[in-house]
Length: 172
Image (cartoon, rainbow, N blue to C red; front, side, top):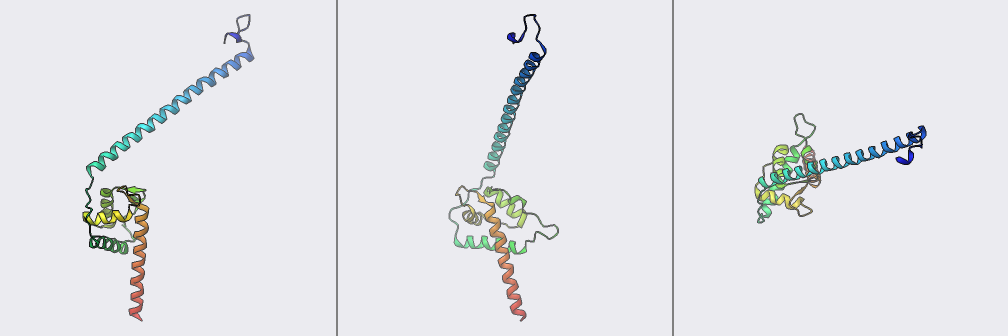
């Protein structure tokens, strides 16, 4: 700064403007860096709190799933899902939407709760374990929701189609 001051003790117009803009730019850069750091720290804090909350929820609702489910449990679970899939029509007034399943993964306790709320499916621990084994592709104990929804709607479509074909055959 001292070199920009003339011999007469004044900063002349062009030099002043350059100095002013340089100082303003430096100050703005400092402020922006600080703002970015603050936003990053806020995001990290928010994420940490969210993960802690999710961990507490999962610990409080953690279900101990049995490993000894049978083929009958698997069959029963799939029958319940198929029956619900046949009955489910998202276009009907009052139908609960599948928005809850539009996440990547779902913990077993949450999956059980959503089955009950959305499709009115009530499963035992052994049936739940069978479903989790079917839809837990990563072996992390969580349901892959996209796989479940594809299976659910495909199963419903197939069962409805079969009913229709049987109805047409009986009619003829």
